[in-house]
Length: 205
Image (cartoon, rainbow, N blue to C red):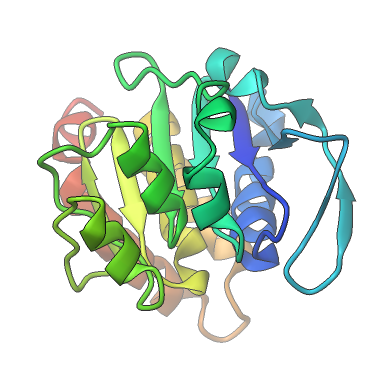
């Protein structure tokens, strides 16, 4: 399972790094989450400079894609040339977005007529793009999911693992990163949020 974590200039570190770290708990199973960007280096909203692991074109090849948020997402959403380089296929890929990343999904036409989640700051932009924003941390329909809030990264990662590797793998990954003394509660809460959207896959286990 090869995963592109789309990371643009001005990115939110919590979105890209938390999701990538949780997904990379699956390395023993052949998974790898890659920081994927349009330039060799991108600078976060707090000045952290990161060297990309994959170019933007990798998004079209990946088995799954997560679009993180950032302070320059509206600029990315307005750049038709840049958007044209993001080739996504929900028939083949698991696709997820967090916070203002949901705006990019809207611009790419991947959540037409589908409720979506985003953060409170990004909500007006996503609504303006014609999306029905709901007051929830996570929502998925088919192979496309959205989440709202910086710490909702765990939901996107858990959903992807649940969809592609099953319940036990998702629980193990969240259990590993959860705070000591609260692990069981974190696992139950996380699974309780994402499992209702993965009913068919779980029934097949």
